[in-house]
Image (cartoon, rainbow, N blue to C red):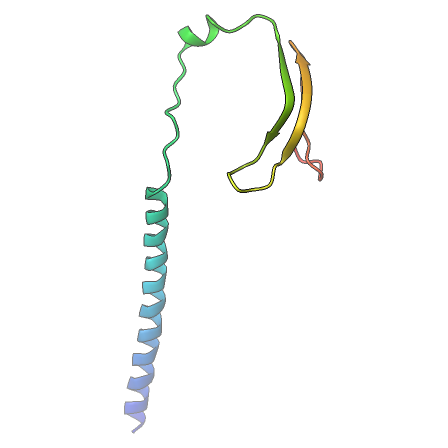
Length: 100
């Protein structure tokens, strides 16, 4: 009777371990499926020839009522910002916590 009880306990422990491992593997497959459905970004390439030759030597940047968010459907993180930046000026953006 004791031998039977121990073998049942071992079987239950094996079942729980296999069930946990199956769940972990399923999550990995779900992640791979999600990544495979992401839209690709444009390839990044930059050569010295096309970068410096056409780069302006002076100028400015104007933002007029500029708004942006991290992803479609999320709240705007910058809302209707108007800003003029002269050539060689430096700019730092901080959030409410002071993080850059």
